[in-house]
Length: 136
Length: 170
Image 1 (cartoon, rainbow over the protein chains, first blue to last red):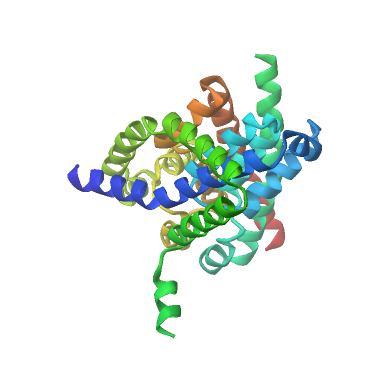
Image 2: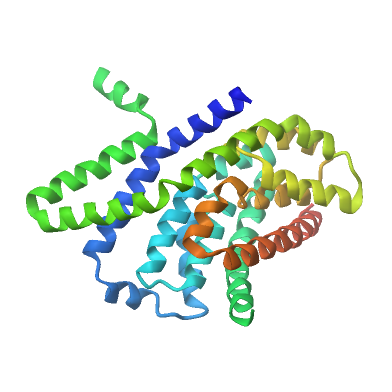
């Protein structure tokens, strides 16, 4: 158990520079960029918002913890929850940066298909989640 | 040359933090108001998320202790629906960076694990139980429950779809 605790502590410690850096950047982003600009990009469009969110989530990658903090703060800035959801889901399910490693071990065809379907599903999952959330 | 090598040795997360701090220092010179406002904003976020890290640490330690690649391999020997159930559970409970799991999945593929099950495992890695406290703090319990169930359902759909697509291509 001690070994597991040390591993967990190391894992959190390794994430710290990313978390601190993300929080600092998000704060700067929130201070500099006016809400009007964000609302100009994300117009609460049920089709475009998840597409944009999914795209950014696919390009960025890394610890899901960072995506929660980043997305959570962006949500407060007025970005729609559907865009945020697509962003969070594609952040971990689509791995553009990891494609070479994944393709080398699991095959090119598999990697390509998995990442394309994961991107499409990130948008569908976001849409369904928000629809259910609105109904319940 | 030595300086370049030293820079290369610094892990990327630390490079990222250093670059962010450098941006802040620049801003301090050009606009102290933006600098202090951003710093205050950051302080508020840190105060909010700091206590949650204790819960994250405990859950991570428990997950590291109970869930190992050996445990997951043992349970993948099931058949039919049972196999899907274990692959979903394995994906959710697996920890560490994704590239750490590629060799194991590659090996399991050679031993007959279908492409669909591998895709399903990778999709479920998006759900991280130790990180749920942070996610709930930001988005609420109801949203996280709905999102989690939707993602699990779609991981199965993706698995089936990948199996079909790989058959067509082959």
